[in-house]
Every structure is written in C-alpha cells, then in structure tokens.
Image (cartoon, rainbow, N blue to C red; front, side):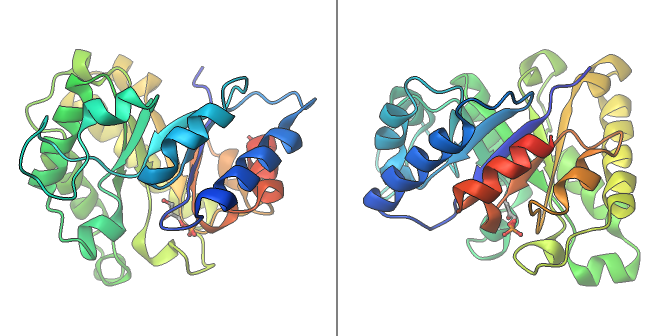
Length: 251
Ligand code: 13P
C-alpha cells in the first residue's frame, strides 16, 4: 500500500520571518494530530537552513524547489545537489511548469537534474503536465508520455526507488480550477501504466504519484480518494498552516 505524501511548494513566497512563522504554525497545527500522510515543505533556497533547524523535532520533511545539475564551479547563481544535502534537504521539485515555461527548462535539462539529484541521494519530485491548449487539442497523454520518457531517459528502475511523480495540469495551477477527481485519476492511471511499460508493474505499483493544481482543504479529500492519486503538491494553500494541515489530514 502506497503512503500518501503531501508536499507544499512555497514558490517565491515568504522571507525569513514569514518562514519562521509558517513553520512554527504548521508544527502547532500538527501537534497532537494523528496523521497518516508524510508531509514535506519546500521553501525558497535561502530559507532552507532556518526551516531545517525549526523542523528538528518534527516529522515534516524538507525539500527544495530546484537544483542545478553540476557539482560545483562557475555557474553563477546556481545551487548544487550536494549543497542542498548539506543543509538537510531530502527532496527536490524538478520540472515544475513554471520552470519549464518561465525559466525555459527543457526535458533534457530536467533529465540531467534528475540524474544529478539521484546521484546525491536527493529524492526527486518530478512534475509533468499539459497546458490548456494541449488538453483541448486532445494531446494530453502524448505530452505526458514525452515528458516522462525524456525526463527519465537513461535512468534505471533501481536508481528511481525514491522517485515521486507529480501530475500538475498547467491550466489548474494557481487558477482555482482544479482538475476533477476523474480527470486527474485518468492521467494518474495513464502515468502508472506508462511507468509499468518502461520499467515494471511492481515498480509502477509502488510509485507515489501526486496531483497538483488548485488543491485546497475542501477538494483534497475527493482528489486523494482516487485509486491512483497518492498525494498532493500544493501551492497557494500551503502558505497558510491551517489549510496545509487540513490537506495533510485529508490524506
Ligand atoms: P496551486 O496549488 O497554487 O495551484 O499551485 C500548484 C503548484 O504549482 C504546486 O507545485
């Protein structure tokens, strides 16, 4: 049975004092609650070390929102996987649609980042998803297949034991218009089937596939009750402790 994993992608939000406040409130909201899901917070790079210190006695885990694929050197402004490890990061979000579209990341760059993360024992949360135009053209599965095959190219099943896939339809991100549980389930099932084809049924059966895109406290339960939805990658609703913890409880 797959454990549900809820990750909060803070995006470019929260300075250091807001980070201290939000993590303290998440810990307070969670205390005394019996939750079954794993929870991850992904603050901006410069707040990771502070976040890690605050999470010391908490089950909440730490992730970053991006990483570069080189180990070190003349890459002004970039952060390496070992740097993330050194501040206690366990997870890293890769291939987010905002990085694909705004920052111009290709499938090939994302593939290199996944490889570099695995090599450094960081657990990738690998995002895929179609735009509204692609959905309306009826090419959703084709786009997802291309993103998955290219993103995971040259990586073996045994190297991917800590992989999480996040299905985030671009049209549902930050729009308040979530995919219906049926729309999400359909794509999650497709992703699991594709992973079974590329790797093995056994590996596909244990792969955690999160849904992301306007997940809120009031729609989380229905989305998370779908058979192939194993968690959520939450944007806006993770910036308030109360709604983030409600989503964790829903799982
Ligand atoms: P929203 O939850 O704000 O739609 O963002 C989803 C997302 O992009 C998480 O990575």
